[in-house]
Length: 100
Image 1 (tube, one colour):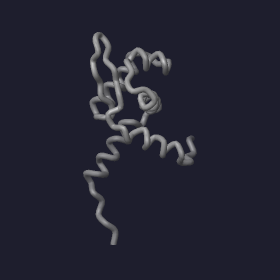
Image 2 (cartoon, rainbow, N blue to C red):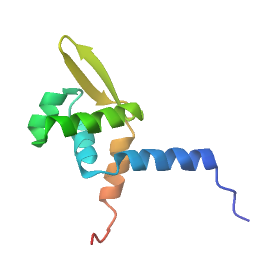
Image 3 (tube, helix red, strand yellow):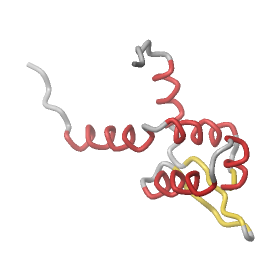
Image 4 (cartoon, rainbow, N blue to C red):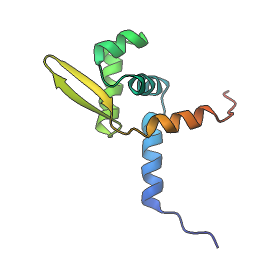
């Protein structure tokens, strides 16, 4: 007989996956995985994105616990709080999925 799903565990997994399920967010996570911390301006310049949209994605991931931030002088630097997220992305990269 199969073991009943742990609903809390399943909800946490789905929460993280929904939070990172956007190409721009994956790119930001990749960038922060390669760099200890970065400012909004650095992330925007490196990825060639609009500052307001980048800030929106950063704030969303911070609010949901994927990222953290620290103020240094006039700048706010973002860093990965959930260090396991890049591992999840790497595993998903290896899956052969047909994109329509």
